[in-house]
Image (cartoon, rainbow over all chains, first blue to last red; front, top):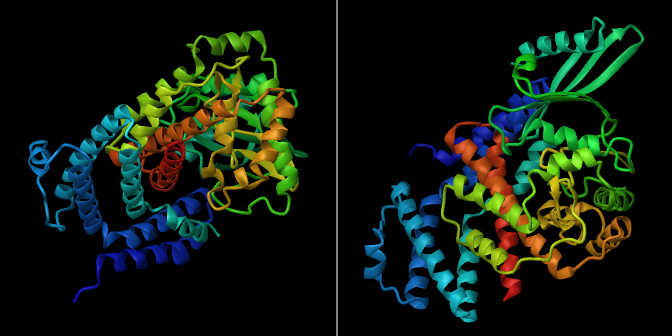
Length: 148
Length: 334
């Protein structure tokens, strides 16, 4: 079995940070290269689950729309949602994701207009879980390590 | 580019001061996303080294601002209680160095990363008292009439709408994804506007940790005025207080002193009575404005216009944090 892409990225980042960056005298170029090293490190950590995370996000938004709005799956399909399940094709899942996010935004506007506090709370919970799954800011420590 | 720039600079500077100069060093500083900043050492006398800072407008920058804006803002605070570098020259002419630029004397001190906890240790208290007091001084300062008029041309009241419209437009133009959290935040701001300030003041526009120089326990300079404008002083206060600048110790904004103490110092220094509800509006606004900046950075990177890693970093890390800040505020408001 071939080495995984994330392992290749991880090793590349480590080489950049620990081996090549210290060889550079120019402070600007050195800082710039170290930043690339840290960003590649973050990419490596998130690479493997990017497709499955997006697919899970789509499933969660779809569930929420069906539960908290007047839309059913047919209505959502008519808006362009294709229910892509092949996680190898991230661009198709992402296209579905943008459709679902657009619908979510529109439905939150309706909840705000109706003063539906419970619905809004549920939408914030959904958005919190979406953000938690997607965010890379919890890896900020990696950047700090590369600076030092 | 730096080699070509350095020889252009040497020729320009020799002409400016009317003496032949020797260039001792010419180094770009990493970090800033709106200007290319260079640290320069020149000599025209064997016994004297001049240390200068050159700020050059980038072809593709994170925040599109005129060089003149920054120059005028620095001008407004020369010889005041707000420490700023001494200005030497400014030009909006592309023919001299290839792009508009500003030249200043270098101040002593270092700038820290705004994302590194405990970076000001063991001087958090002394630096914190100065940081919040200087911000009050910025708001309190009477701006010279000529400078005020130069800025006032851009001011359409109310201040809050002027700023919110501006940054919402950046988001609309540069966004590459639908972001429901951000949209909900923008709607909330338009629905619940704050009061206008009693007095329109100069707003630094990016007053935060990382944008000041310090030497041990002393703040030696307030930098990066390129987003300066006239407006509501609470805008600066809320931006500086934003949890993004102390994400790993939120109780101490800017990784300095506790929030309530910071606000008390700012009130005493600015002589402004704080309206907490208005401050809350500006705190949400700060996160929206931040998102506009980070989205703009992501767009620059994705489109290939500027692949500086700082643009990718901005879209990833600060973009994530400010989105979380918006969500926290929206949840608390329910």
